[in-house]
Image 1 (cartoon, rainbow, N blue to C red):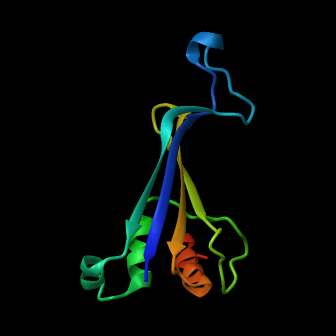
Image 2 (cartoon, helix red, strand yellow; image 1 turned 45 degrees about the vertical axis):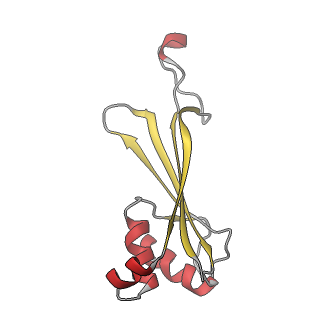
Length: 126
């Protein structure tokens, strides 16, 4: 069985380039300032040993590290389909909406809809 966590990140700006008009707000549009990056973390034997074979605890710990808390569906039921995700954003404390890291996380592989729902509820504290 394969249990993985897919983490996608992109750094964007909600302001125009400073040279254009002093960094005016883009009215909901954004520009990418760092290339998108997607990584996968797969539950393996080492993880099983460290988390006492508790797949849910492993996923919660790994997803918590990403800072995502917003589920793609609300309210969260007893099941979350594979296309469901969690998202979050981090504004640079010095640059504000001129440098925002947007992150989304999906549980891919052999996760059951119930397992996804349990991880989503725990991470989003719903």
